[in-house]
Length: 638
Image (cartoon, rainbow, N blue to C red):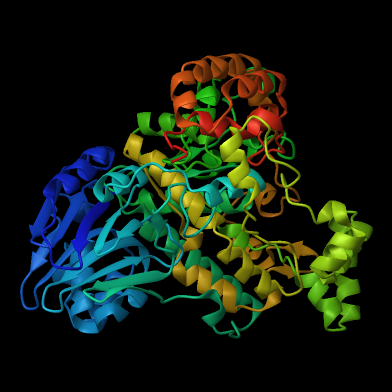
């Protein structure tokens, strides 16, 4: 991805260019193809260019046009370019070479701020309207592209990156204690607005911000609950439409000046996207790299078991599609140790332990774009959470009994299904806490680590952490709304694209295409659970496209990946201890940890890292291991 940044002084005072230069310097990893800036008195914009799109080669941003006087700095990939050209009355053949920023400017000329709601794709941009003396900041509907901002009185600063935003704003690295409390409570700080630094916020997904002399105003232009229900037609028509939508969402994300790869975990979503991406790039004579987190297999592993080894599905894809090349992940102890040592306060990090090495392997093969099936479980390949309990709530007992019976023919889980999928979702939070308290507790809510510095600990104990309640309740569509609002979808996108900037790699998420998401939200329940099968319509749409072992796979697992992490855990733990010792001076100075208590506890606490080494993305953690992230942060208490 490219990156943007800027400052706007609402009172008309001139911007100090040194702050913009400091921000650009902090974001050089986003600028393999150059960085530039634009300045007019109280407004300054900057841009870091990564020319991964063919139309962005040689592009100059910030882009300034006259009549009206507009200037834009955009990190964007717009996918509905032809539709926009038609709506704008433009000749698509003449605008084919336009960079995406120019499309946004043309849309703003016609529709003003309402243009944001007409853009399909991943974007974050800043647009200065000189005639109105107004700045528009906008972010795509899911929040694939990040945008951080800070407001200090009459001064606004923003950037695509945490470090860049801190530099351009001049904020200190004072730790936001609510964010820290959330991290300890849930094991992951995935707030859609809050960051780890006091005074630094994120523009929420699906929002725009208008800023003028009267101040900033945030408007939400997209909400999942606003998507209307519809009748998709017959089963055959619906299945065909699902395939059309996912195919187009994948095709438009293969637009790239570098090689294209796709995660291929052996599951349905990733296998589908890998095949569709391979076919999309085949006509141009390119290959597609299928990336799997498991280690390369040896002769001793053969034959690969399709039910017990995810690599068997990857190899089946390679056999079926001549332009797919497999890329496995030889994870090492240094890879694991380096993953534990990431500063998550400045570089958001989630589910990256294997991806650090996998992306390096892909980059060495010339891959610049990696497609991920992230988001499928919440959208087009939703697993039907809330469906059974909704049938019970509405008194549709015959249909409930039928689906449970058909489900038990696939998985012998009738009693489990009655309790977990029917009874518990119907219970209120109070009932769950009273009668099933073990299912109501937060992951790490019992206590804070005792290795925290006394002043810091006292401050955290006075904070009630924000609760992210994503437990299953009745209603399939209700559950999709809840999951889309939790913040985990954009958090992974923010994390992976932050990491990808180090390798000149951009992550793209086809099933989080707005057209796919809105179809998923408006469709009837049977698409997601029918005849005992979860993800029914999505499975049916992939008939003949992916191997049957992937299409009708009963369980998703990564046994080969997990096995690949076991042997390296102990050497990685020793390396991690050396990394911690190298941070002692910074840790003592920051005032967040009691260093001696932390190190003693860390040596005795291996549970969290052991789970991480065996593939858990959110391990149950105790003691000092829960506080290790603070040792690698440059955040301070005050």
